[in-house]
Length: 188
Image 1 (cartoon, one colour):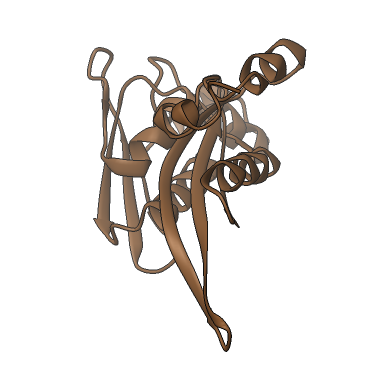
Image 2: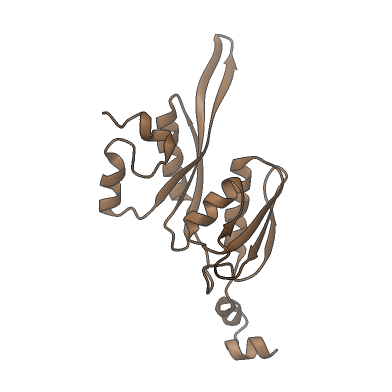
């Protein structure tokens, strides 16, 4: 396989071997983005065992996004396992008019990561850093602000972003939960 190792880390968008295109043809609408690959060691009495930990974000660009993290002896194996894990943890997120958030959210994630998500006017673009940006782009947001406050850990920030997106609700969902029409909701 010529494309096995070289294209594995670069984009993760169908460049690894022949698997990417085969999966896309069948039923896989998701795009993968490798956020982090780190070398980790486990120290045993026989010495230290090295493995790789991959963090992958998957999304379809239409409001579905997930984050996965797995370890393996090789980078490629870790990325494949992490992508599979991310597909299992996909959540549906609301996209408001103008490809932005319905409202503001500040969320506390694991390990000291805080994420602030704010809607933006059309034409603004995705203004975010690190893994937060990957999550928002793959979820399908085109105009939004996001700020990572506290931790710089890509995995915790990605998970916190997904958690914040999952908390968002559209005006229609809020009206339904309160047994009101949209007009009653906005006039109250």
